[in-house]
Amino acid sequence: MSFETTGTIASFGGKLLKLKHKSSSTNTDMELNMFLPPQALKSGAKVPVLFYLSGLTCTGNNCSEKGFFQHGAAQHGIAVVYPDTSPRGLQIEGEDDAYDFGSGAGFYVDATKEPWSKGYNMYSYITKELPEALFSSFKELDSSKVSITGHSMGGHGALTLFLKNPGMYKSVSAFAPIANPINCPWGQKAFKGYFGEDQQQKWKEHDATELVKQWKGPLEMLIDVGTGDNFYKQGQLLPENFVQAAKEAGNDKGIQLRMQPDYDHSYYFMATFADDHVAWAAKHLGA
Image (cartoon, rainbow, N blue to C red):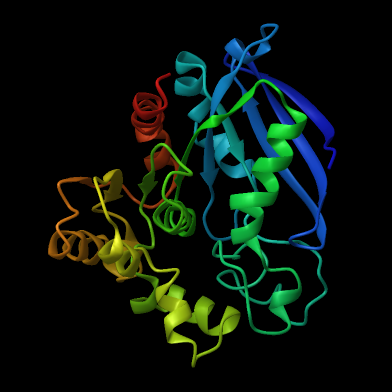
């Protein structure tokens, strides 16, 4: 698979590439952004990779424009990949009707319920198709050193993809993740639509709070949540449920849940702690 580069933007001494390609997972064209740090621009260089998964309504542009991951990534020599959050333009009835389901709300799962199963396969896209294509096309990326992070729905994605694929990612972190989707309105709506109301086991397979109960071995995570986050207050995030489940399974020792006073759910919050999350990845990536 080949990528079309539709734009190149200088940023923090490196380059932000705007990329487009045809996806067999989603049956659509997919767009994404990728930041190459200055270290990657040297001949023969190999740099680690951090995947950043965005939240509801977002594209690959939101964090690359407002999250300022490039600052820390340039310092540590890490490439950052910003994928989209769903297929676009599948012409499924109702896919653009709500902000929290369908377009911009793929929830990083492979849908099993019609008609969504024909293209809403973001789990396969993020864990298999996209990284394989990037590593094939961009030799400056080190496929043996990959970490993952994300915000809100993307925080859910980061946690679940890490927990479902031991060894695939060197580290995981999350900003305000939807940490227990089977018990919050956002997750229940998405899983009902993508899997069906009767597929409760499938729901649990994509819930970080359920997955952490099964984890074997050491577990380290950095999770930031703002105490002024309205979605936290509304019970959409439920990070305490995740930590409690980890504690009951004896897996909580390496989990850092930082409740940040007054911060909300926005990119003001994200940008404030972006350097911390890049540094967390860098520590585990040896960067």
